[in-house]
Amino acid sequence: MTAYSLKQINKEVNAILTEEDMRNSKLPIGITYAYRHIKWIRYQLDTFSKLYVKLYQQINALEKRVKMAEKFIQKAIKHPGALRKTLKVKKGHKIPEAKLKKAEHSKNKTTAKRARLAETLKGLHK
Image (cartoon, rainbow, N blue to C red; front, side, top):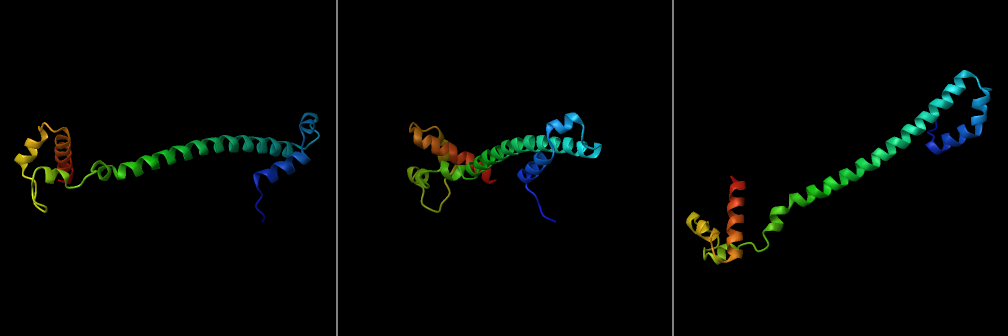
């Protein structure tokens, strides 16, 4: 059995059946029904294709948002180890809680932001 595309079916149906034939009812009832059914299918396919395009666009938008969200923490930390260096903690050692709390209220805005981010990320780790 050969698969036909929608365009091929439309060409064949339009070549065989015309609106004039429908009005004059020269066609048997079964063929008239088939013609109306084909018109209905065409309408449904048009509607479906429009919905499909909208859904496809929404899915692409969501995929982009998910990809951005996957790496938001890595992008938030622009200078790894900068807070540790500022607080003069040796590499490989944990930043003491007291130093982190004090750094959150630092006059230096950058240090305070880094300390708050470290505190937030610390909560995610648990």
